[in-house]
Length: 309
Ligand code: UDP
Ligand code: MG
Image (cartoon, rainbow, N blue to C red):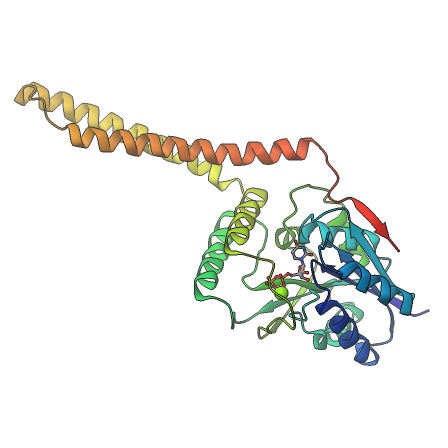
């Protein structure tokens, strides 16, 4: 019997891109390999006609399925839902805007079928067409993340990856509410093959990621996969204590030798500002972890389905 490949596609306001995506993959299907294919579109609470477009595609072809969320839950929730609903022996996650080139699918499938790898991931080698400031911060994020986290998070890695059932089940077994897929994929391990490609620009529509959204996403990623900031808070604290202790000695000695002339107020104000700033920063860091723990402890569902077919 032929194996089944599930293509999971999260979509948010993608009424223009979705049909183009479907047609492109459909047209090159025979080259992908000797597998049956199912499409699983996840409509992440789109406000445009995406759901209708998906319904039309489903009406045309039975192997096109869709899940529609009751509101926008974010791409991570979309990926999770797609992986949960996928039946395939192999599952691949793709963006609907064709920034994940379907031309790589045959190669990815080959690697999995050879049995040598359980997972084939992709990364962009450049960030062509992206604002330079965004690229700069993205690079810094990956640099820091790799220093402070044990999950192997690769610069330029896309969510575009094909994996075997074993890997999908491992990812689904991580039922955390704060989902940071780039971290989760690395965390589960397995033999991974990396394929590189050059950045492709969006086929239609606009990116859903503003700078601010990306910034929050980066913070979420760090909090989800590293506790280093918490350690940093203790280190800061210790350094400040030590410095204060040295200062006390210096001041006592100085007073004993030179008496006690009242000066040094400006420096005092600076020190108070610095120390209270650091205290607030550390409190904020702890707050981040507490907030995430709070959200996890509520055990809310990762997504809510409005309709599916
Ligand atoms: N997406 C989603 N939910 C969201 C935001 C985005 O499902 O809240 C989907 C979107 O439709 C697309 C993919 O995630 O298929 C990547 O989004 P986008 O192209 O906007 O991101 P970029 O490629 O600019 O990083
Ligand atoms: Mg995109």
